[in-house]
Length: 545
Ligand code: RAM
Image (cartoon, rainbow, N blue to C red):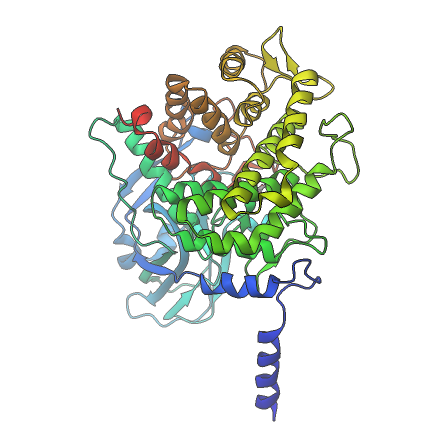
């Protein structure tokens, strides 16, 4: 009887909609099914630690710490772990997955008491050498990857049941009895939905640093390609629209797993709120569900652009036709935020969270104006591709009005730059978005980009996400030398600072910058940082000569 009830519950659960709110889009359930049909299988690879390392304090290195090799890993298996408490293992590369270990007693001893071990996983050396407590970070302390485990018996075999992302692992013995013990196995099962690093085949002439940037970008993307495009495999381990867009761009020039892009677009569409506004982010477990109430209006518009790019890359108009109502709805939401003189009103209720970049003090008004114009035009392009332009005839006209308004209120002709907000702030991103939306003419765009790059006080981006759009704008202006320099200085700066994968946040002037008030909780393998793969492969004349 009990079994029958469980069976019924499973059947009922299986047929229940996955989201609690009533869906705005009538086909949401179907979209979820389509998303599930595209769910990729994960590919697993077993990895062993490569070497034992020690942390060395070195102020000349990133965050003040580097690792130095100290020897082979056989001590793990032959010598008492009590002698090696605090040992640091280097797995040689960034990995995402699960650790399994087994312990044995040494010298014929019989275990007479439990053992307590602490495993601390870290993506970068600084993370391993900064005390986590007392914790003052803005995000959950539980994101930090330290796990304490008590083993009641030895021999024992155990898998740590939390997925981690790391390169370095420190093992501390917190409690032990008089008997000696060692590892008999320590294996990390790494996972991704793409198998090997793909070879994008760069020209022979490519600068070695640019080759390395491409490789690191590919690895970053691979680590984030799980059963959705995750933003970071350490944190937040979930799908965000902004990250999805940039991952899909890089994927189109590398792994070409277009079904993953399709899956994410459907999931997000199905997870829109009861009025049809997209949630900026969603989680997959235990069932796909949005982070309730988490909306970013810029990400909603980026969704439209991502869908257009997906169709242009794959020719899959069926998916775009399905999701077309989502596109229309996001535009409607954005237009409501405009004043009668067609300027984005930062104070109009509801006041939306705009991402664009993590950077204190950055004024997002001009960026949002530019993005809306771009999204209107790109969404119209999608409408034309789908033969739906008659229903949205007014979009190009609205975009033109917004451009006019932007040129009137946000363009400082004398200085030759776009300004934003009451303080008339000059930022890299305000220029970039006005270039990308073609609000500035080519000549004005070149001037604005040149000017901003030369202004020591201009507000520059804090993250690779922001720099992605600066790169796009430079390339659109034909400023190839400047684009190349930005790639080499910024992403190359991370390489020189020892990056195995590209970081969520990087400001060459501040190693410990964190939007969350505590740099160890930053993600050091972050999706939105992988786009050199897209740039290097899309523009061989600029980056491979
Ligand atoms: C953070 C993550 C994620 C980003 C959001 C807006 O939580 O870095 O990648 O998209 O912010």
